[in-house]
Length: 353
Ligand code: AHR
Image 1 (cartoon, rainbow, N blue to C red):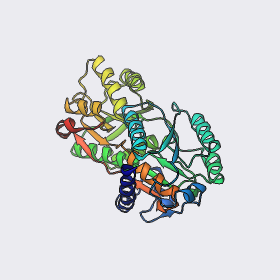
Image 2 (cartoon, rainbow, N blue to C red):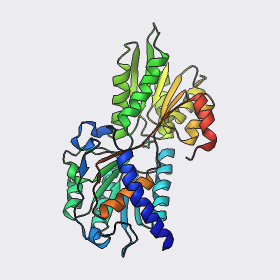
Image 3 (cartoon, rainbow, N blue to C red):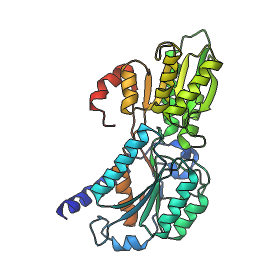
Image 4 (cartoon, helix red, strand yellow):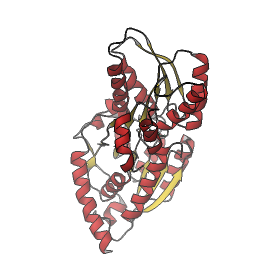
């Protein structure tokens, strides 16, 4: 109890600090969205749960029940994200109802409806794709259950359907990947042939990482995307699609993979084709999970843009705040960096995920 009380106080302070410090970027798919400004707020609805935990410390009369619908288990990033959410919920003393959607939107919609029926205090989810959420989000709103988006955004025009979106700025990630390439090839006289492994079709990270990269490399007309296909964020699909790219194109200079797992699958295909990843084909990826960082340290991936999966603590803080009826920022952006091979070598020993 004592520990819980101390945690509650720490969380209350941390929410205040993170709300002030972590927000401020325009980001991701919601980049054009009016709720995505540093000072915008969504006012939480007064819920029964809010009244029961009037102190907002989470250590009142009632344990907070959080219904969380996860995308799936498609990548190393996702595994680390799930672990972060489960551990943080436990540490915060939440009752977590966790559901794995296996990369299917219909499973997420079912899970959210089931959370509504169970009258959970708060629902959080990482949407598989951006579109098609309005109806179910309206059902949650009508039931008085606040919703928090984590990791990925939705494209709903009505931003009152959710309280906040906690996660990366995927457009910015794509831009960082593109800028590194622009810098590498600034003096090139020849065409640079790029193949792209996209994430899950229709997902915010796939849409935004593509857009950010494309916009940035447009500054140099020698940088050309000659093929672009989805690898669904998985290693197996990354390998399969890269095999097809290698068959169809004899002159690939660069691979841009929307995540490490697809890059790692592609590396297997490149090596099987008798080519040297990182030399014959320059590789850029996103995530910076341990396996990706190891490949970068080994010189097989040349540049990684970090996408931080450790969203659990921020999610619990936000959930606690909305259940307590407090105002929170409508956009909480994760701080992230980038790694060259040399930087990956240095960072690897202390990498958490
Ligand atoms: O939404 C985040 C993305 O989803 C990660 O970059 C990818 O690895 C995961 O599957």
